[in-house]
Image (cartoon, rainbow, N blue to C red; front, side, top):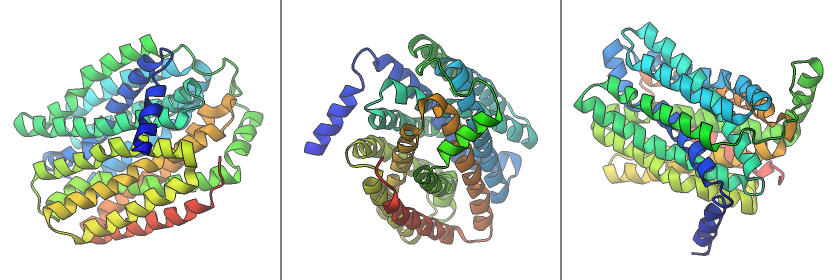
Length: 401
């Protein structure tokens, strides 16, 4: 009860001083950005049927989405440092609205792949700006504020895919994507109204591209602690990409659950994450990354092993709930990295780091899909368990912030 009270106090604290509207606006954008991207795995069976995609081709589609998201991180960080978070957040929602409309209207596989790539680039602009904005607005409670916002993303992962699945079954899969268009427009207006003109100082070390600026960024992001946390983020993100990309398909094709049951279990994974992420952010603020991350990734390894062996519905439910520990990983690692970077290059530095780990991690859906195409779906989850266990052990070496 004491821990619960502490979490409640910290969540309540981030609403003080008139900042709640800013938090809601940023969290709302992340709700949509994550929710629509995680609609892809739920609608993947529909896309495979509509365009005749193999598991490998479906994995390539997901890899394109996340690779584009990775590529856009560094430009997003540079633009946030130079022009301010509010403008970049709004631009991101506008691009996302337009491109997801093209995804919904795609008449061929090439158009689907192209529009998906552009959608990934559009949402990428949101990724860095939300971190730097929250880190500045809540300098002493950044873990809690980021945890709350990331929990909103998990809520999006519960709500948006579920709605898309119902709409796809009742009407058409295209509408499952199309319903996001007006929602992105609404969020864009909220961001413009409630996010400060510039959350950071007007001074920026990245006013122009130069050798000195590049050297400065490289020196800051290559410090040993940041490199180690960055490595763990690469591994953790690769696990997340492969798992979320194919879990609904795995439940349908291997566990032989119905599409609606698979979608429900996928929603359960993210619904549990709504609790996991604020708790993880709170634990990070209180005891540090090197004490909470080993627990989160250790539980993830256990869940991966369990889900590859169990067969009954309730056993899969339990394994899915345990696997939601994976969702707390990014909350603590990204809070650590964001706080460790100097303010005058925080957006650019975080963007560079996110580009690297997301770019490398984006290959995992393609690899996992190719693995599954050859009949090694269960074994793929065991490989993910080994990687999660390695992250758990390595995280013990991270120094306190």
